[in-house]
Amino acid sequence: THKTLAQTLFREWFSEEADDSWKKVRLGDLMDLIESGSRPKGGIDPGLREGSPSIGAESINGLGNYDHAKTKFVTPQFFESMKRGVIEDYDVLIYKDGAYIGKTTLFQDDFPHEKCCVNEHVFLLRSKDDLYQNYLFFTLYQKLYFDKMQQLNANAAQPGINQESLKSLRILWPSENVIEEFNEKVESLMKLIFVVAKQNTKLREARDILLPKLMNGQIEV
Image 1 (cartoon, rainbow, N blue to C red):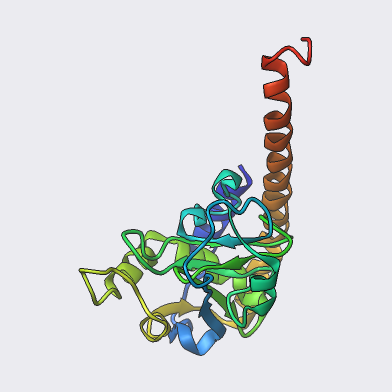
Image 2: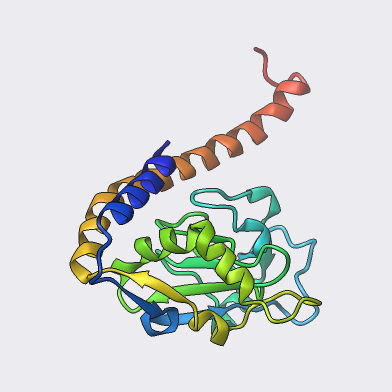
């Protein structure tokens, strides 16, 4: 699959290309933004079936994966009032609370929604340069960094990581030229991943409309 190819490219590129000129840098020094979102007072209205999608930890399922059946919504009025947590193209998302701290994904090209936000259990990571986002995602997606983020948790009773601890995470950082070259190679694969993801969403929507009609005889085979 395109996802497997992209991950293989990352592993091959950065296991073969790594050298002593690379350095370990604080994640916070590379970021323009690390922030979580919020929910309305009293929480999400479970009966709300339309509005602005609010992404929670249950939707951090890897690259190009999203379960639309689990989408929760906030009102457009609440969405427009949000001062933080609104998703932009190429944002990296990290699950910050609970048992799966460190689960990571990236959204782009209006997937999974053209306009959406995150709740208070998810961090958005936005680098100082969009060029870094693909490298950032594939780095943090590795089990090594998943384990490191798990270890940032300071409270076993209520697992979670805060902004300052995440900013302190040190990651391997190559030269600007290497990141540019990797980005050129992986970007076409990333585009395809999200083209396929959106096509799959449309197919599922069509299935969900047609299947009940097929079952009750409204459509003949």
